Length: 185
Length: 299
Image 1 (cartoon, rainbow over the protein chains, first blue to last red):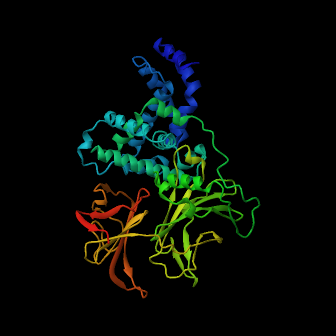
Image 2: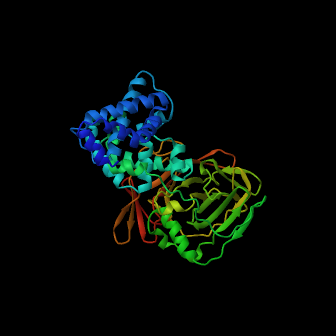
């Protein structure tokens, strides 16, 4: 079923919308949730929460790209779960490793950038990502949006793991430079 | 900024970026290789590739390495042909070599038996001297991996670059080799006496400039470096001043400092610091360098 038809079902408050969403995007959402949470049980739970959240979000939202819409909700729910779970004690694993890498770009947290809304920052990051080569961009998104492991990304792109690490390192450095230039860190 | 803010911001990037990254990819199984080696052999085989189309190839390599048009400044006729080294596990190609008067740069690519690049991070090189002694990362030099990241260059093998410094080399019969591949021996070519520009203000401070890097020698660690070794923490601005009065600010790709020692390992009281350029530079019309506000005329 086309995305527009599924969205129409949501707008009609037809519960078949959830079934169609699960049929089309269940696997996609599970991959995101597994990558972040690294737990089959937690992932399944979050994906169900995501379906509910989509049901509650449409209307008023009418997303043009359901993939990104439901993916974004799944990611947000996963990170929220992860932040709660790791509030007291940070754990190990792929998501934590990716977050540790990203932490290089945020500085000490003592700057005025604490006041900058993530939405505004997202605009800058969008510009940054649009300005780098497609491969670097996709690898960055795979790592820090989808939280894929290095080995998964290496396999997906046909690169060695060292090459993926190197591309990520260079991209993070460029991002850091951009954030510094814009006085964001 | 908090890490959560950054991760949330990344979560809000445009839909097309999210969707495109998740698309299945067609993985290139066949990577560019020089079509010269067929059978794997237990011992290393070394072949020199013919020179046809060499100039264009080397220009392309140097462009990708330096990210600029600097390769045009290299006399292609002087660049040696690629040399391929083959073992049962890896094909390693010295794509080209360039001498800048202070260093010799080796642009090396490598591929395993499936045509994929080996893990360069684990392929630490050594210089083996005539007396059998070893030096990590070349003779007082250094090495690093270079990974072309755009769509066009990603089709080629990854590159390793090795700078072998002549300044610290005392013997002339040494070669590069790689951990795990002892049969591969890349001879380190003799110095070619390529001109290097020297700059001084009359003190014992001397700056030497080549197409690859700016090198300081003097009795004090230059500003910005933490003594006695390491990377700079607060580099002074560095400018090239040309004959027509124009200036160009230097931006280094890497930098470091060493305290020079005599043959017995005792400090000489001299420091040597380098700043490797981010681009390949033509130094012919440089008349002076300005470092941290001090102008050093060309000698």
